[in-house]
Length: 283
Length: 325
Image: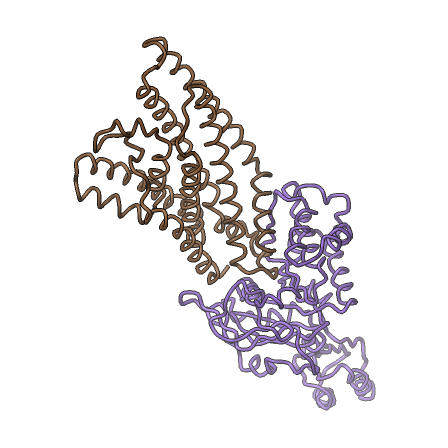
């Protein structure tokens, strides 16, 4: 009950701070721009080489555009998740508004879980709407159908939840500013590790692959995105690829079961840690 | 900077836990200690507040008042010692259910409206939708914000924010209200209103703890006070005892000589003689007529005789001055 009160309150806050409005307008602009760009490139391509009759060419075109679009959405969703939760606890402590709230018969765990639920809900809705409208516009323009949109979208939601739980934990330990620096650095690090792992794969370099795997354990968001991206790409496109080839920021194999399990455990472990640290903190 | 008490002051300190009527105290702390990385904020703080009292918690800035209140609310954990509210461990959810709290830096979610803040806090306090609907307008009116409840707190003045904070602390009908500097942002009219509010809470049998450094404020509303300095209770007791403990009487006569001193010494200690004015220390103001009688019977002209009341400020300054150096 208290958890729902806090979750409801957190969503109200996002609405009243115009976060939802600003986010929706910019997202609409993003989808509009994507659709326009996709349409123009598709037309241009068709005019140059005639209608894309070749199935492989059509699959490659649809895949690359969709992966690009969803990759951008994944980035935006990551930013949204981090911005939402970077001051989830620390901001409340700094403003002093938390004292009166925690003086109520409310467990600190309930406060943390309520906030987490609201952020997870908001970012999942964001990912769902954005990915859905992007996939729909790709389909309407070029007829490209994503092999497994549901699994891809669910994994993208998980990647956002991983990031927001990380920054929620940080906000119980650090000031908002310090937490922002840390989580955005980790976000960048995860991205870089993904690229290193990709190049390691191209070069068959064991050390580079290990670096990528290690960072993925620490911050699995990019690895989960790579797993998600597999489900977006046309099998025809992937089949035409030699070993070590592919889009540098997308995966060419389905996500390993261990990765998915870790991706699901990771938010739970971090949420537990956030509850522990916050429950023992003097305010 | 450590508190050093003179022998005289030390002798005046009462037993730290005052004897109370039978029953569970509203607040009890025993040997409360709080240390932050080497700096000790509270040393062995023990006090007790009886149900229905208006209790003043006084002390200079940094004395440990707010830390004590935060421990009572479960916001801060004590390093040692225990604190309880109505016999329940401080910070316990059941204890918090019975308390209303206005924090020192009353900052609320400023994107909420005044009524929205109360609705949110009412939900957390466990009030039903019906209770919230009926009580919120009353609470807003009671703190003088009638008609302003639907405005965002962001647009409130500091005084209005403090008022909505007071409403937040009392509208769920707690048994104990902890007010940490409740009038710091209010003008004299607002202070007067808060005093009236505290009196009406007392009339309803609600225990009120007032944390303040505004001594006149405390003097006007509190039944009992504890003066705290450097994390210790340096004095506690009923306000009347604290103020009356060392009453002095000033006598002005036509002349002062040895015989007069001898006569006065039977009833009082002669503390000072300045020209024809004698300052006497008495244990009880009741001896004033006896002194007047002695003066007149001795053949002196009595021009004036008046008890000199010490204000709470005098007591306070005496007690905490040692630490101000």
